[in-house]
Length: 627
Image (cartoon, rainbow, N blue to C red):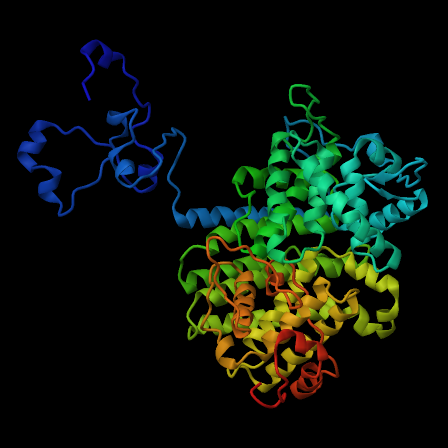
């Protein structure tokens, strides 16, 4: 390359900063000018040091990257405000942020509201329209989607169920007017109907969903491809992520794709930065009220981070700026306590995930998990108005802990002492998750025959059942038949597996629904030989709690003589008349173990006599044989 002429060289652009950020972080300093006299008397740096000190030549090579970044294929950027932060200080900063979360929680417990600092704008208030009461009446003559027609009374009933059972879990929608939503927000209207009837045990609702599914799916695909997405379409996608429609195979679940669409559409509307914004025609979408914007963005963060945790993936919302904005929204807005707790739990999860996913030693990981436990325990509620919400909040905390415990267990050697300690800690958490999840029908056995019980249980968000299934799989994998577990631990594991199985069997309403399909996968896992479930033979070790789930499903598929690896041209599809082992990937339901939970033999004697096992291509075997 020809050199610049003197005149051009004098006006060539120069970097205002001597070192790039990569070199600063790596303690690489810019080159220094040395006096000739000093070099002559003392010798050069190379003469005095065994290794030459690296220098950043970013200023001299501008606009090209510095030599170090170019050789290491790094992005060479210059930031005058950048300062190197040691790893210890980064951990200390995170600890301070988590302490602030704890302080905020303590303030809420005493009924205090933190005011904004001096010089900032006034506290956000809900507009009067958001304080109106729900109006579920609808008087439209025609309520139809394609060739599916609904009566106004049926629509009113469905929206009433949604408001009482679904909305409190994800309160992104304020006061509802059914007639207005039907007229101006049709995708949200039909999404609410699809979500409710899909999880209803009523025969009429199940027939309605069978008619509605195909036209609704086509309508949904059409609507979400029309950019830009308004606020109500983002809310509809969040409902579908939290309460997804059933699929033939969970590898076909589009929830993670919906997360990306909803999150980026929310960023386009500046929901992540501006609680209020003008409705500019240049943006193409109405801004929405303050309440709707804040709650929708909090919903985006919670749904995306929780789904990422259950899939063993990094959260799509994980920057420090995003965390700070979310904390501000929680502090300055009247967010329902149960929902605020769930959001704060996911804040802790998002901050610790990146740290614990790196290759650090077991000692450092143990310290971080102890810090994680402390911060999550600080979020435990003293009590909401409804005790069910207190249980749900505790389950949310235990679920987060369980994923980090299993991440530690899968990453470190089988013989490590710290791993054995973590196994026992996870064992306690798994038992607690199952006890809380099954408490209603255990305490009131007659509730199992009550349709309202099934309605309430099936309206719980998807993460509830993922958590319950992860806890059960953990017991099956590490304690039910483990030689390292004591007889008492094995008995406790068997009892709780039985409780979880009874719970899920009560929720099954169709011969091939996701509950019964997953139940059959559990039966396969329970019958696998000990050599196939050896905990030290994990195929996946980096996907948090889902690692043991995916590994267990792979083992079950292998035991059945099916191919466990895919070719480039393969497309996953469940075999006809057989259980779909991929069900565990994104939606976990647990099997039914008939009989009393007094001993392993009692459980298994009923389990292996199930006539449905013939569909799994297994020959009957004695429960006291190879098992």
